[in-house]
Length: 114
Length: 113
Image (tube, rainbow over all chains, first blue to last red; front, side):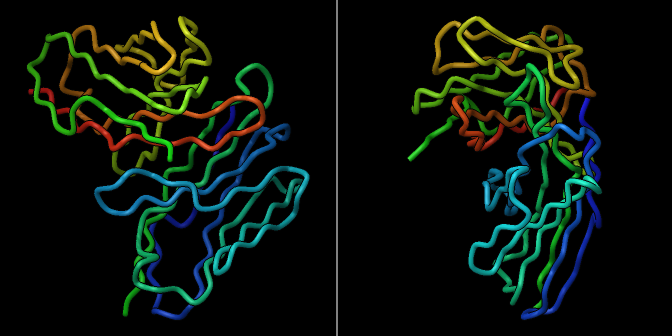
């Protein structure tokens, strides 16, 4: 099955700096890569996603890049703000019969210091 | 606005009890999922269902079963609760037909003593 590795497990930045979180996946046929944000005590929520036919996607201060050859994808947050502090999870959707099943990384705790 | 609800936010049960966790979604989603979330381990899939009465095992199904008798409701059952099942349980749902975003419920914090 699919295996997703996520790094780093914790990340601390100063407000205004950029933050980058990286993930690798094992199934070369995976075709969908979402990122979820989970604030303390709240449910995970989708913040951005990318499909395998696209190399990069941006939404205001966040962007995701995908390198299919290397089987890795990254989340980039620019001009970080304290409200960006949360746990971020990457995920990958494998191929085959379980088309809707996501495999998640272990998460990155991002702390943005004012 | 998609709403996924779970029957309890906090639950305390004794070892050996049978435990039912309920999840309801109101957006006519075909797919429903149960995850457990533990510190440092991320979200791990227990079971999922892609249609009424249909289910598939996820990555950690041992000690759990599920039931989906109606499209909007997906139940997770712990047949005989054990202390290592103390965890946060999250339910999610998604559409089929090319829409993959999963919408999560608020979670149930289960403690087994």
